[in-house]
Image (cartoon, rainbow over all chains, first blue to last red; front, side, top):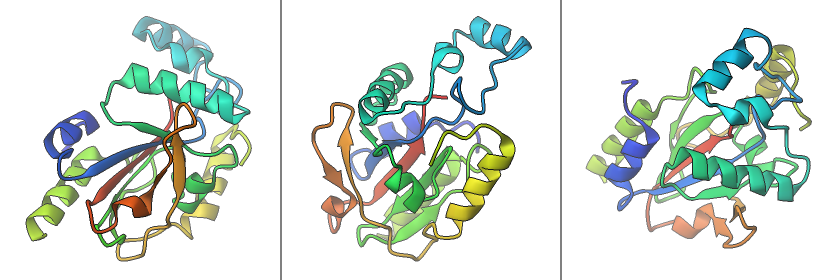
Length: 137
Length: 61
């Protein structure tokens, strides 16, 4: 189950499913719940994970859009990114922080509601939900 | 929401908002969002009767 990526799902289903990446408030910025101290800083450096070492939580919508653009460019999912407003209305409505996946039917009903990230963030489970929904549609 | 600085704050935020998050079978809350340039607004309801929608929430870190 764990080997399915969002990129895999997008490649397989993008003609049948609308994928929307919603960029929300940062999970572990330098000025927040940061994991980049001590040995972790060394590991992040070795991994080339610049964002986890340098990114401060955006304070304005312009800063947030810029960070979202950097994220989109870095991850290369192929999925277009949209940006939540600075007061987090969509994040709050979906209790999405730090990461979460949903599948919404054509009728606007929740078909799959993933668990809260990081442990509940399961692209493979979303893939099964998509497969099930399309096969029943 | 202010920047979360520790596990306790994170758990508190999640507990507060998860209670009202949509579950399977619920109508998904509509929204309007713009792209990274502040352009091209999109609404969840734009896709009603057209396509199912996969929502992927996350950030850079």
